[in-house]
Image (cartoon, rainbow, N blue to C red):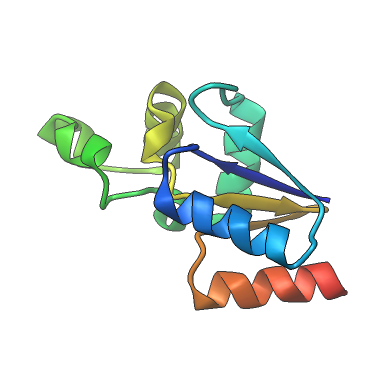
Length: 118
């Protein structure tokens, strides 16, 4: 079972969900805005993927942050920011068994395929 974390109006998340459905992959969707986000989830993703990969620096939320919040980043600061504003998390985040895959680029798709087929 794959758990997909994202935001329902995110184009990349919609594309990922459509691809999983087309492949017949069993999955569930967790909306970061509507369903919330726990500290344990963010901690698990940070440990697995690293904060540099998990942080979405391309979105509006990042651009709207005060300059002081965007400086001197470390895992603790990034974790706090992500818990306060989940849209700072690069989407989608996939959990397959104990593995975490971030994004939906070619490398992420390849990794998901390997995890799903064993």
